[in-house]
Amino acid sequence: MRHLRLTAIADISESLRSRWFFIYTLVFGGVVVALFISGLTESRIMGFTGLSRLLVTYLQITMAILPLFVLITTVRSVAGDREAGIFEYMLSLPVSLSSWFWGKLFGRFFVVFLPVVLAMFGAVAWGMVKGVEIPWSQVTLYTLFLISLAWCFLGIGMFVSTVARSSDVATGAAFIVWLFLLLFLDLILLGALIREGLPPATIIGIALANPLQVFRTGAMLLFDPQLVMLGPSAYVILDNFGEKGYLAWTILYPLLLGTLFAWLGYRIFRKGDLP
Image (cartoon, rainbow, N blue to C red; front, side, top):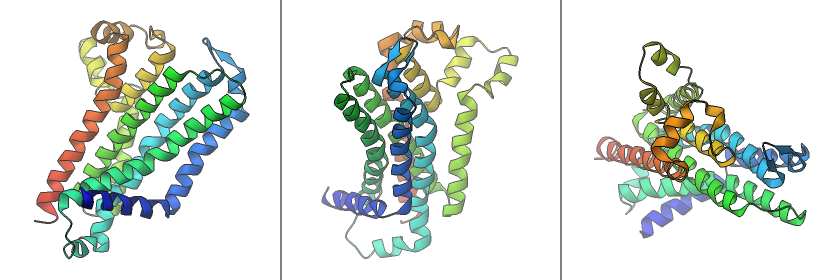
């Protein structure tokens, strides 16, 4: 545990000094500032007013930005260290492979999650100063959603990083993964499945295997409990999950998926890079 903690701290320190972290923090902080300037806290849309409306919008924007940032920065982790010859240096230190891999994973999670949640709680603090009603239950759920989303794509990123032989290949693969999930997000590729005459439940099940789609639908459920915007698909989702069940699925499924990919990445890393 001591080596794992030290590896995590080293990765955090390295990331905090990097240029990408500055840009990453600036993006999410800028999004919150832009939302305040736009006057969303003073608008009323679908019954959502004040900070609730701002947080809903922030969550939707984060869904598009966060996965790409996490994937691009994470996939260069193992692949970049391999190219830089870090592994040879590791062999001279009393650090186990598991401590290095999982320490790097937890350290990177702290780094990618911190700016996102700080920007959100910055919006909450500003709302408290302005005397805006704070929807604490939504803030809690949004925080859990963001933890789940960040961990999911962090696990996928570590898996891609261990499989790829170079940082350039890893970056390209990460972009393809993100683009592929985006295509399924709006059911573009599922149109071909519909033409094949598959049952609606099967099509929706395939769509909900996409963590981005799960996250997006869960965010919609918070301000649209009947999922009216999804049309007939809402009946399949709510009949099988229920409102609370689907919110739990939105949090647990990406967490489990990210953990699975991280574990697979660790197995490949342990067997392939350093015997």
